[in-house]
Amino acid sequence: MKFVEELVVEEFLPTFRSMLAADLRERGLTQQAVADVLGVSQSAVSKYATGDVARNEELAEDDRVRDLVERVGEGLAAGDMSAVQALVEAEVLIRKLEARGDVLALLHEDAVPELAEYEGDFRVHDPDSELLVRERVRSSVRRGVRTLEHASGFATLVPNVGSNLVECLPTTESVEDVAGVPGRIFDVMGRVEVPGEPAFGVSEHVASVLLAARAAGSSASAALDIRYDPDIVAALEERGHVTAEFDADYDDLSAAVADALADRPDATVLYQTGGYGIEPVLYVLGESAPAVAAVARDLRD
Image (cartoon, rainbow, N blue to C red):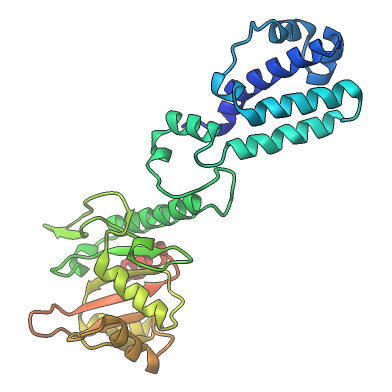
């Protein structure tokens, strides 16, 4: 794990300070004056100004960095710019260079290849960045999966077609915005088998049920499919869940789920009792993957 701040310290600061020290010395400032401005020792200024400190050439050749050095150097030398303004100007540029596809961001991707695998746009410091939101959803699914793995007897709830635990992004629009388990969760000789790490767009069916419920007005963000049994439906109702049945022989899943929720809009359990070649399945809806997993776990406690 390497933070982008480390690259700022290792690559940007030596480059910027070296360029600024040289600029200020050329404008007639003494080593001590430059040292006071930069907050470093005179010996450090000497190394910066004489090129003894290695520069990152990509940053040194960037027009925005060169422009900032010139503006800050001119402002500090003339007394028109305060040290605080110079600091803020540099911080603003750093944030720009950290944007996806920019110099610091590319250096960060070289150091952390997993970042390069993400196709969307993001800023590492943005608390609302899509990357962070997506990773939080994947983390939530992981926690839910761990609950199922450690739940005694959950394997008995896995239908023949397998289970899947999914959670969607807050602004989900399609199956690609829903994270789940690649393949399915299966019962292997009484043990829960999870084939891989949570990923987006890997659970078409359970994700589609969740999306259909949301389109019909449900506030659910997660879903889990388990084996259908009238006793399980009764047990969930005893625990306060509102249940709703939809037709297994649907031509349009969204319409079938919408019809079920029209009578029971607060339903947190959807189920279909099967049909020709269709296994009966029950879907638990909830606010998050761990919350939905806990419902299934508690059925076997």
